[in-house]
Length: 383
Image (tube, rainbow, N blue to C red; front, side):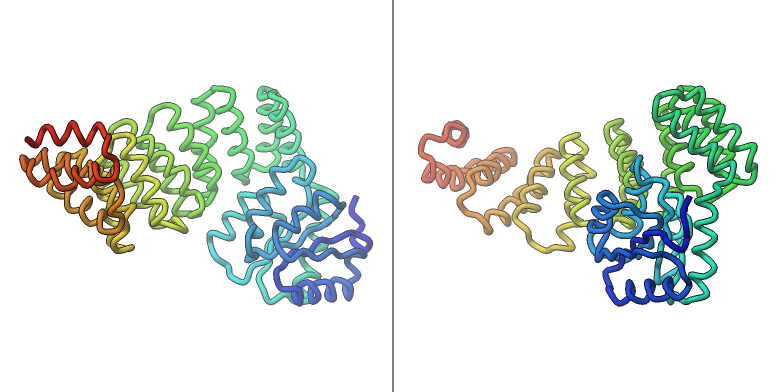
């Protein structure tokens, strides 16, 4: 049981004056005896693992590990997962609220923080921690069974949770997950579909349903679910990204590109992601997608030797030798000692029926490496 008057409290905020303000308010209210300050999420996690706390207040907007990322780590830690957590944010953004809800937040509060706000929220949270609802107790027991691989018992207990609170989508979501792990696809789908009907913001239910459709080969169903999850909470773009890669592997290139386009809208670093996906697509011989991605990167970055080389290689694979030559020659302007580049220029001139033009780069290669066998073989084709 947590004693609200003597509890130990962790407050994580990169602004120390906010810690001082919260601590002062809590002392005025008679809440807490020991207070620990953490300036960022990483320090807060270390403190939680090394110490013993009854309550954590986490600012979301911290450098490095954000409050939401720390919350998700706490909830996935067997030792820390039952810790009461209050999230603090300066903005009532949908992504913040839905992501916090996914991670079983105890409460979230918006700045500015006042005496009345903490006076209302903290006793409620401590009361729930000391006297959890029947649904919460059942779900905790079900999770413990699932961790030990006993999905049959986890399903029975999760059904009790659903009966204890028929208005919550969470028991149905967990039931769907347990059925899915058990291999009962039909029951899993029924539970997950009911969960998203009850709560249109239940991102976990959407992503689990998407995983289910993916396993059963229903690409359209998986795509709908992953895109819906992204609409609710953009951080869920990684599942859609993986779906796009799967579509590439299945040679469904047009649909893959549509998925990637949505992912780029949500990615925190779309340019680097485009380069990564272009490399992936080139490896999978999806050269048309790779070409589109690299050209869009080049439009943003301007001349870049590495991107020019990649584009040249992709155009070469597509048989677009004139375009390949254009990119290779421009890349050569940035590095005139690159033997690999000069060989590709020569190959494309030969492919275009212009062997005389191929001699210059080949002789340049031999000046650098007189015994280069590939250059010597290509040079023989030019005579």
